Image 1 (cartoon, helix red, strand yellow):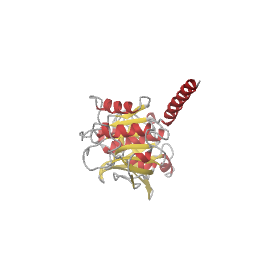
Image 2 (tube, rainbow, N blue to C red):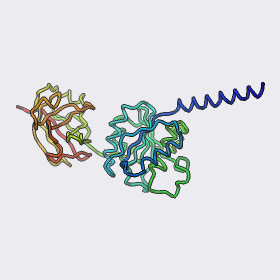
Image 3 (tube, rainbow, N blue to C red):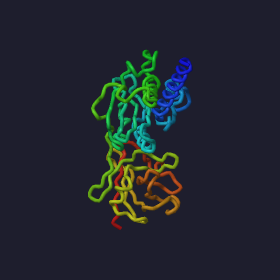
Image 4 (tube, rainbow, N blue to C red):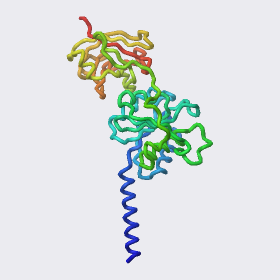
Length: 303
């Protein structure tokens, strides 16, 4: 009888441990500039899988242009709000790997976690979701065992490992490492604002398949211009405050509301104001790119 009770106790203990582990799991979401032509991404996922074979693992993208910290920042802000609280994002665009830049985990006010080098990657999620707390990763504790002599693949050895431990509930946020001030490295850029009847904003990204120019000017801010469909707007695009393109476009619901080849202003899928050419590539035609140095000015035309 004692042996039977002992066996039952052991069974239920394993059951509750498994249940606790399942309940503590959160999604682990990767992005990088590694591409998928070699085994780097697979190696990161292998490390995470070894931490917890039940961990749900997903991707944002691994096609960030090499060393493009700005685009990494944008893609995090684009994706993170649609994931539930507790999701852990591992972002590895790290041209300074092996240098003295900090490896951190930031918890946003929305309850998401971001594991990344503190090199500007957190710029947009810090602005969009807020910074609740930041901990530096203690590599004496949160580093893949046996990787100490590797200095150029922190994505595998530090970030994937720490992210998996955090997402699986094997460590709490406080166990990541020392708590830092609630601030991260930021890339300066033109935040969206309305100034003297003119909208000022940034061009954070291009809709690359079609050459549409996306801005960070959201619907709420654009509504302050009291726009109506069909209104014409005067637009200036600048790089480092140098005029690159200037023209006019109507505000419309969709591309087919203007003739082929004509410019238009519209709300993109994020409900931010964007600029396009119907059936044509605006960015390629006029030499427009994206990044922190690219800005846009929009105002009602007088005519």
